Image (cartoon, rainbow, N blue to C red):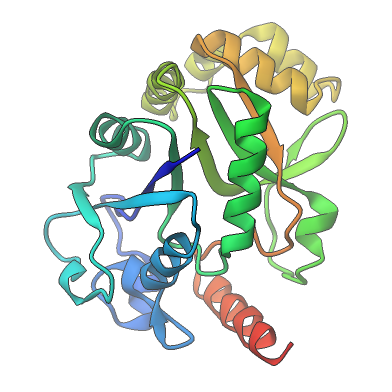
Amino acid sequence: MTWQALVLAGTRAGAADPVAVATGVAHKAFAPVAGKPMIERVLATLAAVPEIAAITVSIEDSGAPVDTLATAPARITAAASPARSVAEGLAATGTPLLVTTADHPLLTAAMVTDFLRDAAASWADIAAGLSPRPVVERAGNTAKRTYLKFADAEFSGCNLFALTTQRAVNAVRFWQAVESDRKNPLRIARHLGPVTLARYAAGRLSSAQAAAALGKKAGCRAAIIPVHYPDAAHDVDKPADLAFAEARLAARETA
């Protein structure tokens, strides 16, 4: 299977990004990690994956020095939200489409290759990569993080999504609807359904059941893909994350 890749590099409107401020850059995606912009590391990783034929970056038209990148990916203008940016990216590229983010400097070609293989084998229309808690904790990051607590395991997101068929557009539309109500818990509850939420709150919802329920609500088949790489769930949202990423990259070089 030959894939397209979409890198989400847009910034949210509002307060200045703490990573951009800490590193003295105008745009978070260009914050240096071990001497190289984060987005450059992500693009190099994706370019090293044989299954990926083309890469598109979703980023603002101004304030982002895309022309300074060593690689020259295709570019679309970031929308007002991640879900809308994915919708526009999907319309521009088609499927199968890998979606990841520019703030994932610890991403490796092996992680991506394994995720794409398992996503294709799942026969799902859309798949999300999640790392089990014991795997995440092996990386040694002491920062507090939020886990999805299912009956079979606790997972953390890896910013890896595979949109394998055109039916994935249903999931993206569902995501947009939920995203638009993100400040209203009652409306989010209506999107997901009271039974699913009650089972999750009671610790009785497995990861497979959660994927099936969300897929049914969205009108497609969804799957959760376990990612067994300790660094896969560690992106850079805070200056402390940046220091952790640099330490992990240094450890790789001396391994």
